[in-house]
Length: 243
Image 1: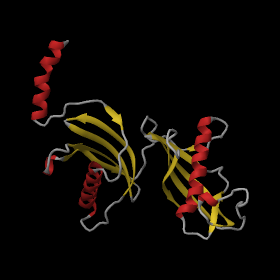
Image 2: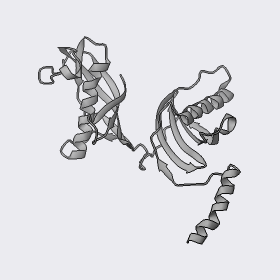
Image 3: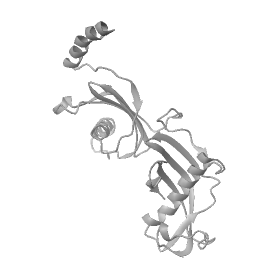
Image 4: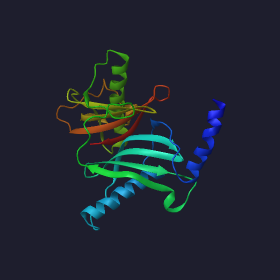
């Protein structure tokens, strides 16, 4: 075995020297919108969009990183699925070699391939599953998901410039998706929020027993993205919302 490994080393070194990836396994990862390869991928998508729709077309902005996978090569290869404004979903692969400069630092190896239709299946580990109705809170998993939604609804009062507090309305139409990341990323849709007669003093000052929903109050439908990390304190973080 030792002889075989020694025999392979020159070939691996030669591959790296000529810029050929020394391939490793592909694994799921979590990256931020400001990560250099992600910014580069969005730029490449906009360059392609300008070519197809005219140089004066409005650029696309990144809404979310739907899926990200990484592969150790001579550097890092990222397989990205990005959701952009205009409801575009784009697949693009980026080869990133942080020690290089110029055009060799970041290279598009495949794509961008864009569609205005969300891929139907994203159920693999690291991907986003299909939307599901809000679960029953009778078991530990269901309770964690329901608590994540309640946390998001409560936290909305810290983010909104409103005189009165808002609480959850009827949740029967709420759906959610889950994604295994550094913990679990939960995305809630069709969330009804209803104002109360209580002054908005933030989530910490919200007493659900004393502040029920006002039947005649302002109603709005929201979506929330919550990060759940059971080992952290606090366990929940509100990453994004839209109402």
